[in-house]
Length: 64
Image 1 (tube, rainbow, N blue to C red):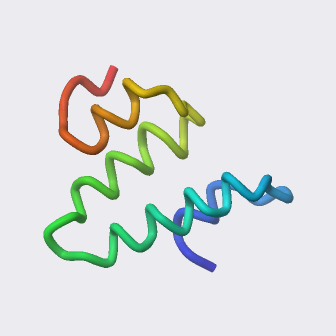
Image 2 (cartoon, rainbow, N blue to C red):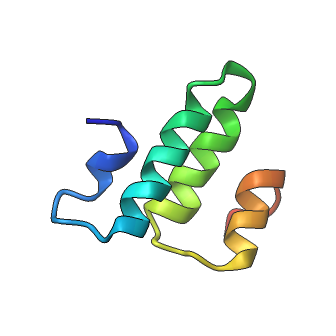
């Protein structure tokens, strides 16, 4: 099971599984490891699917 998918132990909607798989694939790229971690922390862990959360995770920015 991908590390990102472990955040959701209960049955997940398809969108959550796709997003977790995307984050895992991003994390497999050495130069994108920081981006993947920000996506895990901001989007997956907090379940924040807002445009702001994605922008900050992908391009850096405030983590609050």
